[in-house]
Image 1 (cartoon, rainbow, N blue to C red):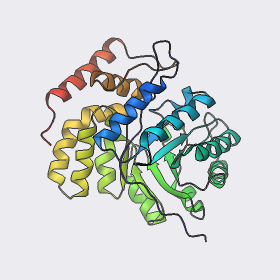
Image 2: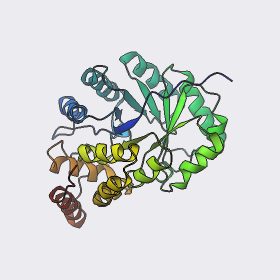
Image 3: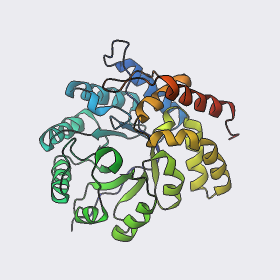
Length: 302
């Protein structure tokens, strides 16, 4: 078996938002401002154009523009990981080839959109994408959103693909972290991918956290990760308990609207989203605003 690449990623890596103008055109300058602010806060990388980054709302040209802009902002200081969520394997292959040329540091690869594959088809898709690039790949498992689970058996079958190095685990069951380690050992680096199981994932062996709410509360996200890595679980629990009402937003169907509203309330971006998503309204909007304001007023001493 070919020796696998070492995973170059760790720490808190926000799933950065994509910003839009009032007429819902891509706001590239605004997107770069969001990315630059996160880097200034000390995050350990950027994930672009995943679920929170509304990758499936962007045209092919816009995706490449967002990536080009992020590479410019990061200036080699942190890894820039491009989300790959395409409708077909062929368009995913085209994107990773272009993205590597544009300076991406690696990829977060989703199953092909809309179609629910068999395990064989899922493995084929990931293999074809991986063979199209020399860069490291993180697979993204999110069964509630994408209706397919990357099970331990599928991961084991992909162990011979050297540049598949990590998995972002967003199933709402922390037992998955242990199941993957038991099935695959240390072959794949684990990342917590659902905000409200971040503590569990990080204490069960995840090396990092791909986070949504970091867009609004980066200091607390970094402090939570730092505390767990240092073994200060008392401090980590205190931060996590304060954070949890907001972290639950990441596991709801309207997570993108909620996170972008929180981002706006914290003065870090705009809540504008592209249809079919629409900004929150009514009681849901009021509830999210109240959560953010309550969290802001009671921020833990770090």
